[in-house]
Image 1 (tube, helix red, strand yellow):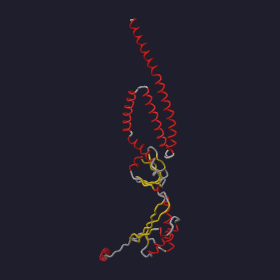
Image 2: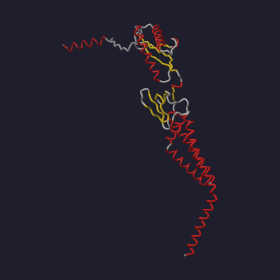
Image 3: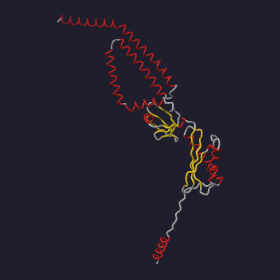
Image 4: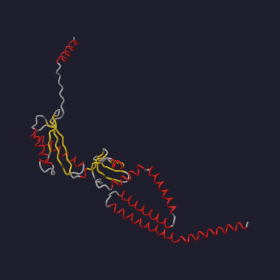
Length: 300
């Protein structure tokens, strides 16, 4: 019994001596690995701040700038961990960690496929110079001012002050019309005048009215005027001109001003803008006579 206890004690002491020898042997490597991790941590903090400042100059969305700076910091820390494990000769452990991370990443990617696609789309949209916060755009059947682009959604404010929230991937996968990329917009006015009107006078008066109402229209020659059809109660025309504008609200205001000024000018000149008229004509006299005869018979 005493022999067994002695052998067990000797085995424990031998094992502890082996561990101590291994610890002393790998102590420089352990210290160097720890130094690498600490250095990577502090460098990652500096890189995080520097990347945030650099990205925020090009991207107005704070959330996007933060995620990019954090990703760069995490990558640097992982690189430090990789070097530290290499110093400790733990290549097998490193391989196992990478394999586990790969499997876990695949599972998480499949589970969060839509979320990740919106996140990637948000980062891509943030770096697109042709789509900026404050632009007036039209996409997916909605039109409004871009008020936010984050990692999840694309936010518009319509002309009636309603907020439209769309997933980023819808913006990236569908056509988008950006009115703010150009400094000019064309305003179109469709109207009609009575058949008794002097068409040359109508044309001249309309172009003159538009040229006087807008400073951007240099002369009457810059106003397009075309008669389009003989309508049911009027001769219809199309009038077009360009204004300096970057949003649909400015275009709507200009169209409103043009309609008001044209109406004033027509009223002053006695030009009629007719409304639809329906005339009922009864030509079947036989039907009327039969109706009157039937009425007389019923009275008798």
